Every structure is written in C-alpha cells, then in structure tokens.
Length: 305
Image (cartoon, rainbow, N blue to C red; front, side, top):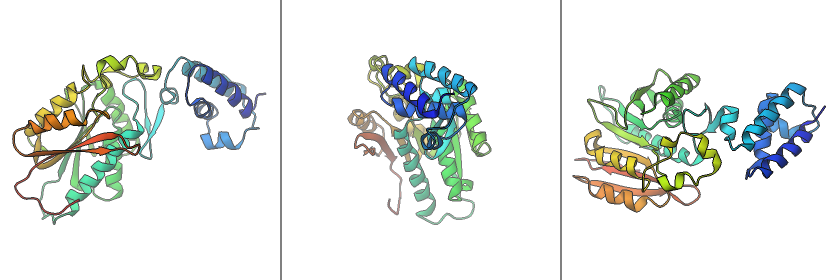
C-alpha cells in the first residue's frame, strides 16, 4: 500500500512536468481532498498508508490537474478572506488580490456608520456588489459586518448577469448563514432600483480581449465573460463609471478592482463625469495599482478616514 510520501512524490513530479508552478502545493491539496484530511495532516504524516479508493481518487484528480484544470475546481472549494467558498465553472475563482476590495469595503461601511451620530429612523446603508460571481465579496463583507454587529444597519445587494453564477452565490450565502441578509439579483451590470446606493463594489472583467487567450491554461476553465474586459480591458468598467451619477448617492463611494496599468484611464473617465468627483488608486500588498476609489462630492461631509 502506498504511503502519503509515495503519492506526493510521484504526484509532484507529474504536475511539475505538466507545467504547474505550484506542483507540490497542488499535490498536497489534492491528496488531502482524496483522503478527506486537511493539508496540514498530509504534511505531518508522510508515512501514513493511503487506501486504494483514496489513491484512485488522487489519480483522477492528478489527471484533471495535468490537463490544466484549476485546483479550486477539482477540490470544489476556494479559501477567500478567511472563508471557504464553493466554486465550480459557473463563476470565476476568487483571487487573493480581491480581498483588498472586501477590506476596504468594510472600512468604508464602518466609517459611515460611526463617523457621525445616526438618529433613529435614519435609513440603513445601501451597498451593492456588481458582478458578484460566486458571491465571495458580498458574503465576506456580510460576515465581517455581522461579526462587528453592524449588519442590521446595512442592506447588501449582489448582482450578476449570469443566472448560473447567482445560483452558486446563493449556495455560498446559505453555507455562510447570510442568505437572509444578502439579496441576489440578475441584471446586466446595474439593477433597477428606486434609491441610489451609498457604496458600490465591483470586481468586473478587466483583462483586454487579446490577452485572455494568453493567460495560463487554468483560466481557460473559467467563464470567459468574467475575464474578458473588451479591447482595452475597460469596456464594462467604463460603463459602470459612466452610470455612477444615476446610481450613487451624493457623498457615496465606488470601489472598483482594476488592472495594474488601468489607473490613469479610469481616472480620466471619472474626470469626465458631471459634477464633483474624485478618484484615487490604491496599491495592493505587492505594490501594484489594484483598487480605484471613486467618490462623489456631498454638500456637507464631516469626519475623516
């Protein structure tokens, strides 16, 4: 009977030969899935024997990974902002860099709720996550606000043009016990709403069409519309920015994930909006431009962040 070490050694070699740049990690995660254990247990017990059924499951997973399929799809789960999300081909796999969008959204909501007294009867904050996909951003934000006891004062809407993606997002919302606090709506970019939003979040496709086919093979398993941002990568983002005057309240903010070289173009679109707007670009942890903070001026605004 093969041991964990045996299977990891052969699996790592096969994945490295197939082109994986994280072959050992991939093998550990896939073997952990096959034997029903966490990766830490796989690493800690290299001499443990692996049963025939688990070895067969590991072999099947290796074949899928050798073909380029993302580990997240094979495992059916992806960790994001401290939470585990179900993932499959219905939606884009949540990326680590998108965690910045969630963290900044939490800061924005907390500032709006605590920077000034909120008299009884004040309407709750309205937040919308556009292009929600698996629901990772909206659900992670709802979970953070629940932990801070702020969720009752916030309404979160999650929007996507894909009914399949929304079905996955609803499943994740149920899994994280926020299905009754996040509303999911199918719409082409923007929902029909009678009242504008205080905060708009968006991780929209921003890769130029010509570059999509040059992405690592794993990306070919993901839905192309979630990646393809048009000729310059900004087709969908530009539509959203140009619509902000009609959907964002005065004093409201929009947080938009962008490509590392798209900051100046986004700033130029914001500069062309009617009224008073500002845009600043925030770097991610690797020092690359990642998030556009777009703010609409209010008649009066006190406090600071």
